[in-house]
Image (tube, rainbow over all chains, first blue to last red; front, top):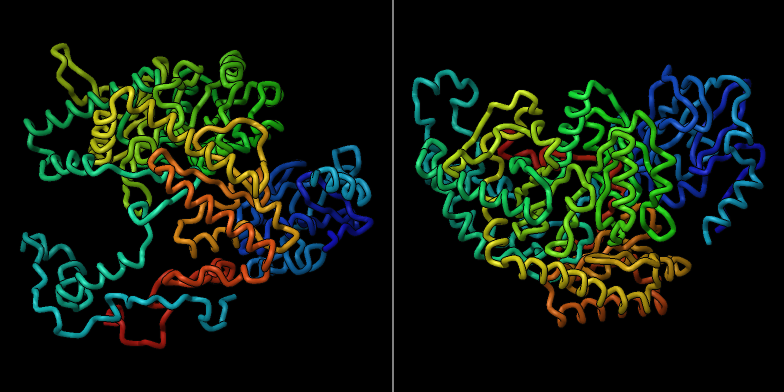
Amino acid sequence: MDTLIPEGLFYTKDHEWARVEDGKARVGITDNAQHELGDIVYVELKPAGTTVKTGDALGTVESVKAVSEVYSPVGGVVAEVNVELDGSPELVNQDCYGKGWMVVIAFEGAGPSKTAGIMDAAAYKEYLAKEAK
Amino acid sequence: MPDESPVTGFPVILEPLLAELSRPGSNPARTPRPFDAHLAEDLGAYASPPRLPEVCEFETVRHFTRLSRLNYGIETGMYPLGSCTMKYNPKVSEVAAACVSDIHPADAPAMERVLGWLADFREALLEITGMDDACLWPAAGAHGELAGMLVIGKALEARGEKRRKVLVPDTAHGTNPASCTIAGFTTVNVPSGRSGCLEADQVARHLDADVAALMMTNPNTLGVFERDIERIAGLLHDNGSYLYMDGANLNALLGVTRPGDMGVDCMHINLHKTFGAPHGGGGPGSGPVLVKADLSRFLPVPRLARDASGRARLMDDAPLSVGRIHGGLGNVAVVLKAYAYVLSLGAQGLKDAAVRSCLNANYLRKRLEKTFGSVCPSPTLHEFVISDRAFRDKGVSAMDIAKALMDKGFHPPTVYFPLNVQGALMIEPTESEPLRELERFALAMEEIAGAAQVSPGDFGSHPMNTPVERVDEVWAARNLILTWHDMNPSSGGGYLNG
């Protein structure tokens, strides 16, 4: 099964994605991440209003296998949190780039960019291929 | 939003709960009243007899005997749960612990003997680890970690410093970040190198004036000895930081090498892993915390020390102590079981146990790597990790392999840990297992590997020969039901309903 890596999103080495929408970034975990974690049973996220730096933990994702942190691909303030994940954590498995989004961050400055260790779809695909070896 | 779906995923258990066996009037024994009638008036809700299931003694005995036959433990068969050190707990230790079960803490002459044994054991631990001081009271490994991190926090405070960061490698034990956080630190994850070791250069890159300590598990969760430990200790000390060692894997080092000689400042020992006291459901545990001399004055109270005549005494006079961390003297009986283990093995016996734990693990590793492949190029000590990589394209996971092992009569190994190996199966046979058992286990694993190649589709149905078949773990984790009463609302007649 091929891993989904949509064009137009930014990706991190820790397998988060970010989509820039009107000066804000919508953030979630990648298809590769949800697949490796397996069935997700619980998602806990920092509340709206929290200030985060790039690389700070945005919350934790718990699967039957492990508990993992989600790191912020961008610095700013958490503007919105996906409350649907509270009762339906499986959305992250079913639709990680859509209904399984986690937070929206009102970022400072230029937002996610290649310079801050952030990759585009092609670079992330290459990174995954290298990691698998 | 509450989940309205019916309870479908709960396994059928062959033995009813005592509450379900309860019939009014079937227990002829009378519930004793609280012995002090005056006090009973003040007890409020507790003044009425507790609502216990009404079953007679014979039914109760049968209930627990039947339950014990549904269980699997180290005395049933091999229990190769990596990182947990499920070794045999010698019966002589139980005899030793029974000596103190009738002693009242106010019985001064008897307690003096107990304190003497505790002081003797403390000194044995110092000799085994090369550390300078110890507190025996923490109740488990993670409790020892917490006590140790509090000691480090207090030492920094005494230096007038407020450092907040603790470095934790990805091969450390899972409890380490939790203990740091509870002690008021924030953790920074440090990746290990290709060899499965933490590299000094990597640590150096993470050091700054805010780093309080590094918590290292040695040997680490891949079973690899951290060969850079002395250099890492030097880097930390030059930076004004402390080296904490999680001693949960100390059974691999006993009598061979000592943390105190490697530059470790603070550590804990899981007595229930290293020294053969019962573990897991057979607990409670005990996790003494040990320090070098410069951290001694921060250890928890009461302090166990000897007076001028050599008699063991408890002392509370320690103004810089982190305070009390446990009532009384911790889990005294567990400490004495560990002491009995140390005395019965002796110095050479402890070393033999360490060597044997490594020999057993390496015998299995070499054998199983032929079938499962290798995930770690480095030599390993008392435990090792293999993975489901060879079977992933067949759709057979580490969990499937673990469940299939149950049908072969073995407790599964630890799965999906450590986190830096995908699909990990972490195996620790311990020094207790004879060669014949190792052979049986290897054969079982090889048969499972063969079946995974030929008929991978069958793997979803394991285990089939256990009292409870495959449970829906995802369903259970997403639908937490914490009481029997909630789980079974239709029964309506439980004793909890009164």
